[in-house]
Length: 93
Image 1: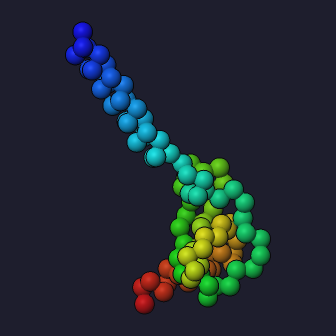
Image 2: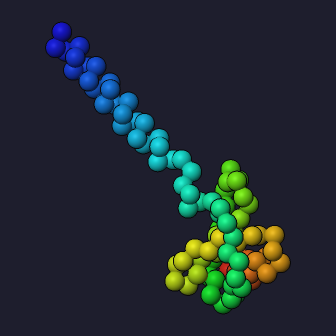
Image 3: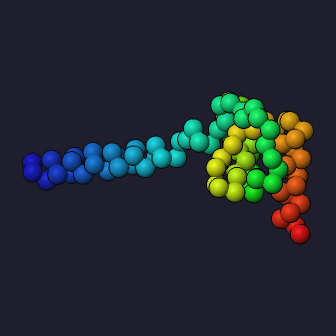
Protein backbone atom coordinates (compact mmCIF):
# COMPACT_ATOMS: atom_id res chain seq x y z
CA UNK A 1 0.00 0.00 0.00
CA UNK A 2 2.83 2.38 0.88
CA UNK A 3 4.63 1.81 -2.44
CA UNK A 4 1.41 2.56 -4.35
CA UNK A 5 1.12 5.91 -2.58
CA UNK A 6 4.73 6.78 -3.34
CA UNK A 7 4.29 5.80 -6.99
CA UNK A 8 1.13 7.94 -7.24
CA UNK A 9 2.95 10.86 -5.62
CA UNK A 10 5.85 10.53 -8.07
CA UNK A 11 3.44 10.45 -11.02
CA UNK A 12 1.70 13.61 -9.83
CA UNK A 13 5.05 15.33 -9.25
CA UNK A 14 6.27 14.31 -12.71
CA UNK A 15 3.09 15.62 -14.36
CA UNK A 16 3.43 18.93 -12.50
CA UNK A 17 7.05 19.33 -13.59
CA UNK A 18 6.21 18.52 -17.22
CA UNK A 19 3.35 21.01 -17.33
CA UNK A 20 5.59 23.73 -15.86
CA UNK A 21 8.23 23.06 -18.52
CA UNK A 22 5.66 23.15 -21.33
CA UNK A 23 4.24 26.52 -20.27
CA UNK A 24 7.64 28.16 -20.82
CA UNK A 25 7.34 27.47 -24.56
CA UNK A 26 4.23 29.63 -25.05
CA UNK A 27 3.96 33.00 -26.73
CA UNK A 28 5.60 35.73 -24.74
CA UNK A 29 4.09 39.17 -25.21
CA UNK A 30 7.64 40.37 -25.88
CA UNK A 31 7.66 38.33 -29.09
CA UNK A 32 4.72 40.24 -30.63
CA UNK A 33 3.94 43.88 -31.43
CA UNK A 34 0.60 45.12 -30.12
CA UNK A 35 1.11 48.71 -31.23
CA UNK A 36 3.67 50.43 -33.43
CA UNK A 37 6.06 53.20 -32.46
CA UNK A 38 4.69 56.35 -34.10
CA UNK A 39 7.64 58.75 -33.97
CA UNK A 40 10.48 59.07 -36.44
CA UNK A 41 13.23 56.50 -35.80
CA UNK A 42 16.78 57.63 -36.62
CA UNK A 43 18.47 54.93 -38.70
CA UNK A 44 21.82 55.39 -36.95
CA UNK A 45 20.33 54.31 -33.59
CA UNK A 46 19.20 50.89 -34.86
CA UNK A 47 21.73 48.04 -34.78
CA UNK A 48 19.53 44.99 -35.43
CA UNK A 49 16.00 43.88 -36.10
CA UNK A 50 13.86 40.80 -35.72
CA UNK A 51 10.57 39.97 -37.39
CA UNK A 52 7.71 39.00 -35.10
CA UNK A 53 6.44 35.45 -35.16
CA UNK A 54 3.82 34.42 -37.67
CA UNK A 55 1.30 33.54 -34.95
CA UNK A 56 1.19 37.11 -33.58
CA UNK A 57 -2.00 39.09 -34.19
CA UNK A 58 -0.15 41.99 -35.89
CA UNK A 59 2.70 41.70 -38.37
CA UNK A 60 5.64 43.65 -37.01
CA UNK A 61 9.35 44.12 -36.72
CA UNK A 62 11.23 44.63 -33.47
CA UNK A 63 14.04 47.14 -33.98
CA UNK A 64 16.91 46.93 -31.48
CA UNK A 65 18.68 50.18 -30.56
CA UNK A 66 22.33 50.63 -29.57
CA UNK A 67 21.18 50.63 -25.94
CA UNK A 68 19.52 47.23 -26.53
CA UNK A 69 16.04 48.78 -26.34
CA UNK A 70 13.33 47.09 -28.48
CA UNK A 71 11.00 49.22 -30.62
CA UNK A 72 7.99 47.74 -32.41
CA UNK A 73 7.48 49.06 -35.91
CA UNK A 74 5.35 48.41 -38.96
CA UNK A 75 7.43 46.54 -41.57
CA UNK A 76 5.18 47.86 -44.36
CA UNK A 77 6.34 51.44 -43.75
CA UNK A 78 8.93 52.52 -46.36
CA UNK A 79 11.19 54.08 -43.70
CA UNK A 80 11.27 50.85 -41.70
CA UNK A 81 11.95 48.85 -44.84
CA UNK A 82 14.94 51.10 -45.62
CA UNK A 83 16.28 50.65 -42.08
CA UNK A 84 16.05 46.86 -42.38
CA UNK A 85 17.79 46.91 -45.79
CA UNK A 86 20.58 49.13 -44.41
CA UNK A 87 21.15 46.72 -41.51
CA UNK A 88 21.19 43.74 -43.89
CA UNK A 89 23.70 45.48 -46.19
CA UNK A 90 25.97 46.44 -43.28
CA UNK A 91 26.24 42.77 -42.27
CA UNK A 92 27.74 41.90 -45.66
CA UNK A 93 30.39 44.65 -45.66
